Image (cartoon, rainbow, N blue to C red; front, side, top):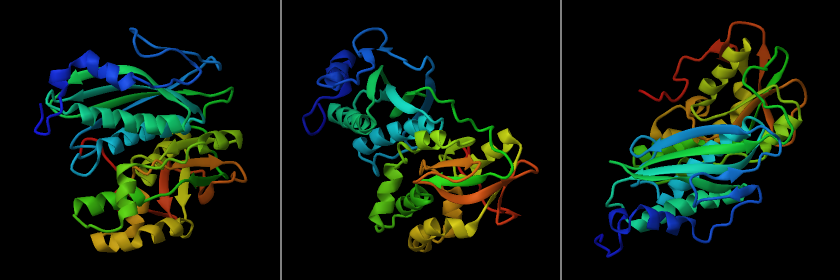
Length: 318
């Protein structure tokens, strides 16, 4: 037992814990076999399935002295859902593997699961299976599945000269929140929470695909870093306009000042907002705003026509 008298994973055991996590959950209509067998069965009406996976490691991607387990669960689902959205697909299901020390309280695992179901349920998706293992620290691995519903996937390689670059969602908020937590600045509560639980613009990936988006990605590592993938795969130069990013800069200016950083740097390189950024050949759909242009040239991302001298974003092995 823990100091509070509640059981731990070691005391409850793997399968009783799994039984607790799946009890009372309702799967979406496309799931014909859910948790309880060796594998799940999910219908794929389109005949194709979008698949992505991502991991969160305690101390690297989240801290339990900052985040509640419920926040970690929501974040794990949201960052994978954003990848599905960026392909122009709809999230249909998630598979989750979780590792934790044997002395982890059962209540924390339950809270993590509740956070995942909260986020997945809002998308009309379910958690259809997974695994539970012992680990030195918390590790959350999520595989997300998506349905294209007859649409072509929106790749990184389709941007063309003459197109515009647009964003759905907000930029810089999570990066600002991270600095506030890291520097112990107990203010700007909304930005602090934004870092713990990102807010992808759900549904806008499908909207972009239907509007003829040529290329799309989610902003996970930073706007510059993620647009650089589009520039490289498409063989184009992308030029961002600082004036068009002014709403984002203004939203983080006070927090950036308190943290001693340049607000534009947070917008360009902060990452983990999981906004969507796409290239369109013409007018952009509702919910999107133009922030730049696409031109012929060397594969690179410029800011007001110049190379950006600061950090471009997150590096996994730094």
